[in-house]
Length: 518
Figure 1 (tube, rainbow, N blue to C red):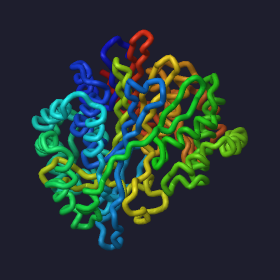
Figure 2 (cartoon, one colour):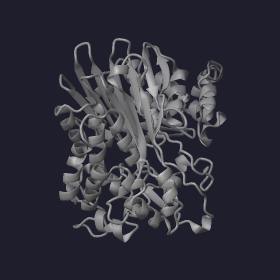
Figure 3 (tube, rainbow, N blue to C red):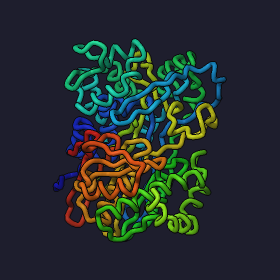
Figure 4 (cartoon, helix red, strand yellow):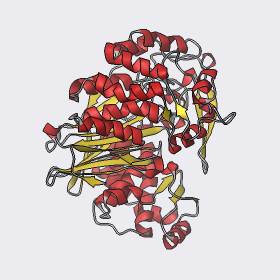
């Protein structure tokens, strides 16, 4: 999609994208639009986005478009200030079936971390936005109150996580189908969250203290009395962190990413460093090299100790030329041998750019009283706890694979992108970047092209590569799994770009995850 306009949006649902685009049309900037999309996603993408979760916004204000003045807003979830004995925690397994793959998560109040979404939204609003919060919340308040027909992808996701969203009587009352006994809401059936509408209205009036120090804080703490660790002190102590983005040159472009203590941005930068910027040819050799780089990145992840939470020293070691060179040397031999997240990208005519990735995990299974909110289960996600459950450091930011990304060129062009998909986030963004920057694909082609993903020495191959390429890949990688069609498993990259030289806007939403542009 390429247009001349006041800006453009790519997001994971049509309602999310439209809420953001309407704000742009009324004169709001990219950050106003991103927040309007965020609040709408809480009703339009209910499993992927919740005020009970957290996320990141990588912002490029217009004044710093060419001089490096971007900022990363870290409002991801925080561990509680105390670790309780395992026997005192409500912490239960919940298997989730995604069709060709399944994964076990853990839910219950013992899986809940301190949410940062509300604090993050208000911090971004204070620093960067131009329209009142009441305007940005208004579309979400209206639809949460009257109800919204569930989109096909959201129905699919809800069905996949049914063991979680049918776990408690409160969640069943909201998310169960009125027509199919025992099933979650079907496509087109109406999801209404009037309590969420009321809460958003109260937040617009009273601000974030309502959530972190007031009535909502007391509600969250009371819910945690039954098997959780989050208390009033944890909520009152929560802070949004503003960080300098991670920066890496890739050919003529500069790529800005999510810095430490998150892992996704540094690992994406490492993979780009392995591959180096140069013209590439599509085909089995490129995909083999790509799979090798993914495998080596996983190996480097362990060697650099990022799983314990990254910091500047660890990232500096990971991205040092000496460390990269050692892993590049393994590329030829390695090639021969072998969630719930959503994203919004917005660019506007003032040269502002916003890449925002948010998550609620899969949800903890409980609905908070009188709120329309299901809290996160970040302490119950294996991907976020690679050293094992119950071993987290108290009062610390949880590491994340979320990787909101900006690409800047010297002539002022800018691209915002990001993805959902847990461990597939990095590989999805990586392949879109390489497709666009090195293989010469348009943004829509780059997002839509078939993908691969290497994890634990298993190469996942998405349909669409062609029989010759598929035959070559499966011969080189005996340990492989093929996937039919374009699949949710491979993430969902939503990208938006602005070229100020001719004032055109381009966006691409990923059909794998309900992508929509506006």
